Image (cartoon, rainbow, N blue to C red; front, side):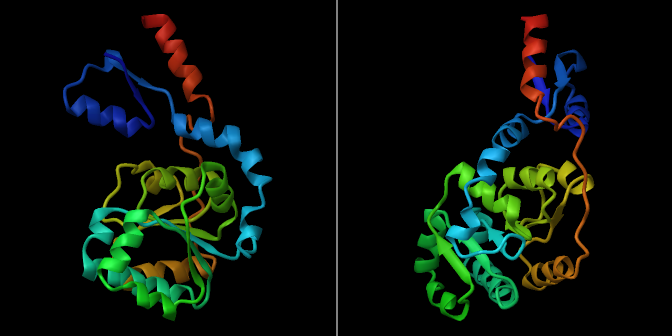
Length: 222
């Protein structure tokens, strides 16, 4: 009955689907509420130092989507790109268990021997991961939420997908789609290393008050 949207294009999509605008409310992004609330606490955890990393001197990686890790040739190509990148920039990879399983199943784990600066670690808690994002030079990911979080943090994000359900992170934020093409992944990373990353800006209403707006709507309508 009530639809709460994170960006104006979401409302436009709903209208094209025939949804009445009377029940659609543009309120912002509740996930950003969480990020902004915990940002200071996360920043005190000194997580990069735990892994021997210098703030602004490493890349953070997540990789778990079936389109990337369930296809051996695609996964191998991404690993080739990462092997090249880690020669000039350390990469920290909190790895999803299914991704680690695919590495072993496809016989790709041995490739990590050629990538001494690509460190695979166990999955991390929210605050630890947020701390790592805040201090990374760039983030490589196929996650949806991380595209939004890096936009607010002002950290360049390379999304290893051919599309995104968060287009505002591209039009207004720091996100760039690079797909799974190894050459493009490396090229875009080098562009960021050369200081040519997207500046980005905070999307409208991503200000930490989305939940308050939702409550206000509920009080008026329920």
